Image (cartoon, rainbow, N blue to C red; front, top):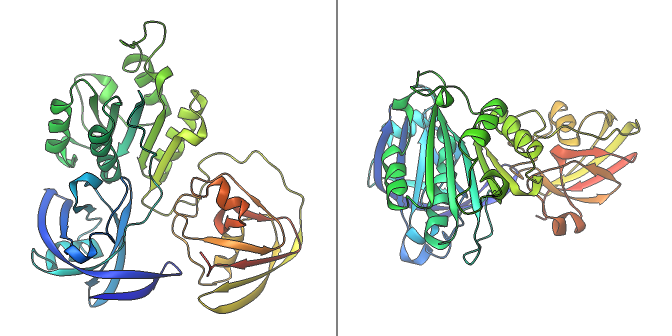
Length: 375
């Protein structure tokens, strides 16, 4: 069975999948493993770091939420890690009302929190995860350990307390099985630890300590540190954590193109500070097409991004993060000019094709025409 539905302004394909396994991980988290029928194996091929959208009933309403895969592509299964945010919330209903053998509507895999595999290279990759943010990073680390025999990994995993650590057993097993290539460090913000280094949030100050006390001496190169050898950084957690760590990594020498992040919540702030100023334009006319309908409006000026101004005017434009990470507001610029601010989503090729993210675009002309439909 399959169905199509508008989700985040896009026509999305959903498939009817059976729950094969369900496990409570901590007091507020659980995992679901979904059974993929033979005829859908191709549809559910995915890259490490991606997610699926799951449609289910909560209080007699249809709910659609995105959940990252914790399984790696080579495992040939879809496993999801899910956090229950409140006892009355939708995910609580999902946990209480759906059991092994029940079915859910599940979209095909999506998302760009991915890395290019380089199995023949010697690489150093570090991951920062906060709480539920471990889910896509677990997928990445399992995949890299399986496909890149020369890559070494360091994981810095922050939680409030020991009992809230998801996948502790699985992570520790990976660390034991790959002791020469994987090191994991746990940090607690609301629990005392024997070593003060591991007490507190993962932030810029903590990164300084990590660089100086953990990523300092490199056994493979006596003249440099482990931090000097870092090729890629993966960050997943709350918006403020991503912002502070991404900027700290950048200021410590990691190029922005090598800092990858995934956001699980709406975040109305820029990850990196905007360093440009723009000439003021007033009374900007915006026309856009979405789901076959034509819309037209006027923005008072170009002091704010196009998406944010359209949302203020109550237009049903697609969005999720508002920070240039998720790509929900991707569209074509058909007329006019915009300043596309730094974002984690679009490739250089896509930008040359005329694609923009409305949440990261500032109008530079009096008229702007967008098309959300041909993506």
